[in-house]
Amino acid sequence: MQQGLYNKQTGKLTNPSTGEELDLEEAIETGLIDAESSIVKDPTSGKNITLATAIQKGVIDAQTGSFTSEEISLDEAVAAKVVDDTDEEKPLMTLLDASSRD
Image (cartoon, rainbow, N blue to C red; front, side):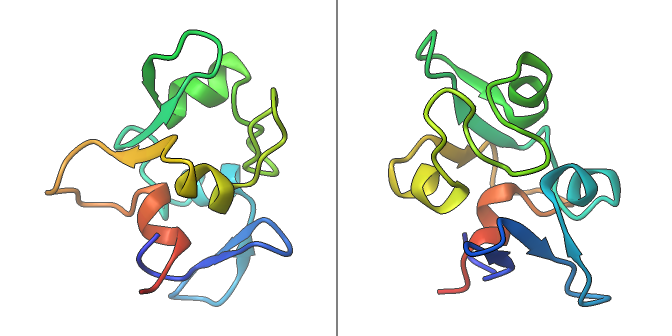
């Protein structure tokens, strides 16, 4: 979560170009977040899946960005290492990139 664009109070991501706050689904739709390069650990199977698959399977709520099974927030998921990047060279921001600016 390198860029500090995630607001844990609102659960929204800030578009750095416009300053607009977006929910996770909007951030993906506008290209701010790359749902194919963000990896999520499926709490049911224990396997790593893409963020896009996690949303499709209902593991992640696209509006709140929370895990539906445990209702943990994005920052809690990163701290627990259930959200990761798939590769070093990515054109779009991953969910991990957007969450923190350290």
